[in-house]
Amino acid sequence: MTAVKSVILAAGMGSRMKSKKPKVLHALGGQPMISHLMGTVSKISAETPIVVISPDMADVAKVVAPAKTVVQPTAEGTGHAVSFALDELDGFAGTVLILYGDTPLISEETLTQMINVREGADNPAVVVLGFEPEDPLEYGRLVSSSDDELDAIVEFADASEQVRKSRLCNSGVMAIDGAVIRELIEAIGNDNAKGEYYLTDVVEIARKADRTCKFVIGDELELLGVNSRVQLAEAEKIIQRIWRLAAMDSGVTLIDPDTVFFSYDTELGQDVLVEPNVFFGPGVKVGAEARIKANSHLEGCHVGSGSQIGPFARLRPGANLGTDVKIGNFVEVKKSDLAEGVKVSHLSYIGDATIGSEANIGAGTITCNYDGYDKYQTTIGAGAFIGSNTALVAPVSVGKGAIVGAGSTVTKTVEDDALIVERANEVQKPGWASRFRALKARLKS
Ligand code: UD1
Ligand code: MG
Image 1 (cartoon, rainbow, N blue to C red):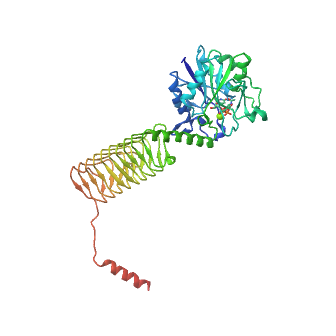
Image 2: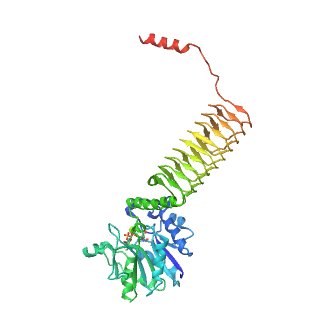
């Protein structure tokens, strides 16, 4: 394969999203949609892509770095956008892939197929990726009189009734011969329904110069263009389905796959079992044979093998759990290291803590890690037993094997192997309750 350079168009306003945020930064599977595309492109070419952005998209430039960004000062169409990448392509005679930042689901295989056609028989100037969606909506239409040769692309706004009836649509993805891209792009005009410079015109321009143009047909599911929130949700559905199947194929059990949500980087070990309604945000790794019980939310955390999480557990960023840890219902863990065999079985908040192996944290234990200004650490030694409803006021440490009596508020260091109980003295008055009830009854009558 000869060299391939990619140009990703992302300067459009994305007005149909009705958002203050650039369209390509809307998240898909836990990362900006343009990052999906960058990931796919990096698998087929070592060349850094060129991303076309608008002047107010410094945040997009940051997300795509170290990719090169070029600025399109005003959004005057996809052809106009590509013209700003031309200087970066000067002297490059390989294949230039043009991708749209809002078409993020395209696969490595499809791009490779396009490059092969571009570099194969007849040396076509342009190869366009077409698809035949159930509902062709307002996509541009491919006009062709043969199986693989392309005559023109007509935008929906400019299409006759006859052309609109065709279901053969333009995905937006193109592979163009780098040797002629400048002359093709510079020949594009804006005499059309939208008054824009349409990239799609390169097909007719190349044909007039007696160069062949071809198309390949891709899978509709890969080529959904995200222009609205509804399409964003459709893209999410598609990508989740792919990830669920991949997880099951790799040896993970999903009891009800349709209710489990993954992120782009979720890693689940062999024989992990995921119960219904579980959400994996970015940055989650789960070791082999762990069980994630129903209605749990995990993000930025590591779950050791053999651990049991939930039901109704929340693991927040920096929760780092060793092997065979048990996190029960209504427990939240944040930025804490829990060593092997630790149990936090019910109704607790563990934040900014380090807990030694086999420690048992009783129901309702809270690490009071925040004073409104700063965060403080709690350290619990191996084998310690923290009684129910304990408040650990950080910074504080409980020694190895120590026992904290239920209901204590612990503010000072607890030595190894000590018992600490912090509680008001109990007062007991025999017979008081029945005297009280008798008094109340008299007053009511
Ligand atoms: C485009 C295609 C249409 C195709 C559809 C597939 C053209 C003229 N039309 O239409 O044939 O069926 O995609 O989804 O190419 N952009 C810029 N600068 C601009 C305009 C757009 O960078 O001035 C970028 C956008 O950020 C977006 C991409 O180009 O990532 C496509 O633009 P969009 O406005 O969504 O084009 P469509 O109307 O969807
Ligand atoms: Mg679009």
